[in-house]
Image (cartoon, rainbow, N blue to C red; front, side, top):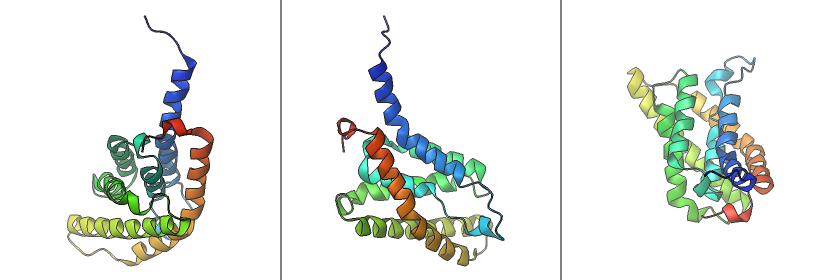
Length: 175
């Protein structure tokens, strides 16, 4: 017989916090900002969250949830199908693979690691989109995206850290 236990529900809900925060950032990414051509230079904000959770709580963000976030981002954007699902998984994979160089280091190393990962995945997205559209895509928006996301990173990372401290206790950390 199934027993209703509030502690189990609380535990499950807390484990979903990283996914729902990342989903929130996916939706925020598509808010219209009335600045001329901002949509061309708008950074991929959910990558900050994916990066953060892959560094600090990879056990709470499985690859399938990262793929799902990428698929949702793809469905809302006018990009080649599967592009951002691949980009999100690339970020996740790179961070999981190299997290020992970032985890436990100071904020500057954490920030620099993100900028490097964002640059690499931006180049990956540029190459894939150029192949998809059979022409070289302008690189200027990528430069502006990198500048904008580099400036936004500390704010989003600190919000992610505050969420982690507020909702996720140490017993959930299996990293």
